[in-house]
Image 1: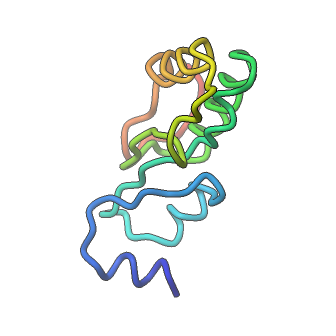
Image 2: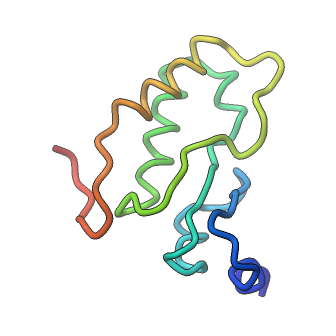
Image 3: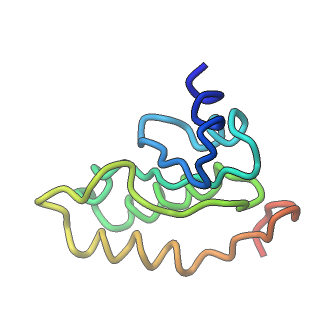
Length: 107
């Protein structure tokens, strides 16, 4: 299994492509391995409100916020909307992520 092979490398962080659910990756990898990713970069071409919704969905995939580096699933598209990039960054910065071990819920 590819996930088991990744875990055996000793990597501290695994970058997750936008085509893979973060929840799935979190279940398949040991807790010691942090995840990086994985907003589909196509959301940076969308309306900023849609980018915010997609970013919130991404953040909700990890129930305890443990070991996650928020990032894109690939690079920034050449025609990305500056307003949508801003929406992505501001949404991430504005979310109150739970501490490891805490239950996820809106405050």
